[in-house]
Amino acid sequence: MYIEKILNNNVVMTKNESGEEIVCMGRGLAFQKKIGDLIDPTFIEKEFVLKDSITSGQFQQLFADIPLEEVEIVKTIVDMAEEDLGIELSSNIYLTLTDHVHYAIMRAKEGLEMPNPLMFETKKFYPKEFAIARKGVALIKEKLDVDFSESEAGFIAFHIVNSEQANGNMEVTMSATEMVRDILTIISRYFGKPFDEDSLNYQRIVTHLQYFAQRYLQNEAHDEEDDFLYELIQSKYPKAFQSVQRINDYLVKKYQKPIDKAEQIYLTIHIQRVAGDRKA
Image (cartoon, rainbow, N blue to C red; front, side):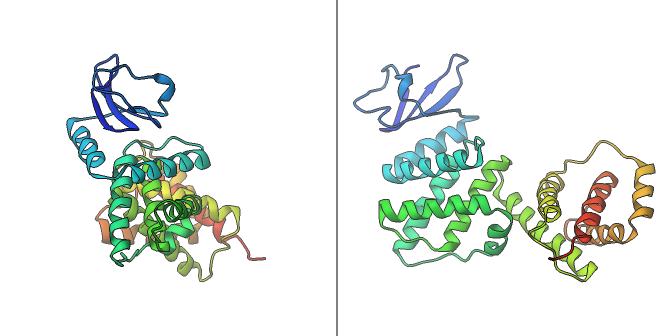
């Protein structure tokens, strides 16, 4: 592969064998190089395809405007996240998180702090991502001597979650988090008791609700409809089933869309399990 554009010493644009425009990242990848030079594959640490001309333009503009040390810090945070989570994040995070961190640094230097309305939920539902974000905040302090608040750690964690879920839409991620919070509140109030948040069943229902919220907001319905099982679950777990109807009422009121029968079955089962937990 040959260098087609140099965005900075560590980031270049090229094309693969299929003619697709790709970004290659690696320390010193473009050092003392020029357009047309061969890329040394041993220097490439990250490589991803740019899906369209808009993304290509955004990458070029972003990396032209943002200091190199900020780009390097974001890459380090993404590397930490991928290692700690054991997954590969969506490449879009290099755009969204770099842009966010850049303007967060500018705000911090001016003494401005953005409130984070989902701070509590982020720490509660995404503890791994929040822990990574806190390490990122410490890195920014170490490298740039810029102090970020815990709220900023929450925002960084949200970017990681958004990239992890690969929906590409921060609004969906934030709405899903609000939905999980509200549904757990509905269940807790209906049964008149707090959850045992240390129980395995609580962790299971939180995970289920996170995926359910993503599917619901992106209109991904289940294909199967089992009327017999629906009736069976309704009669076997009447209280858990009624709590699902309250959840359904909330979603219809807020999003004008009911929960499909298959999803009601799964929710009822999870609620029945978590409702049976007893605090030690």
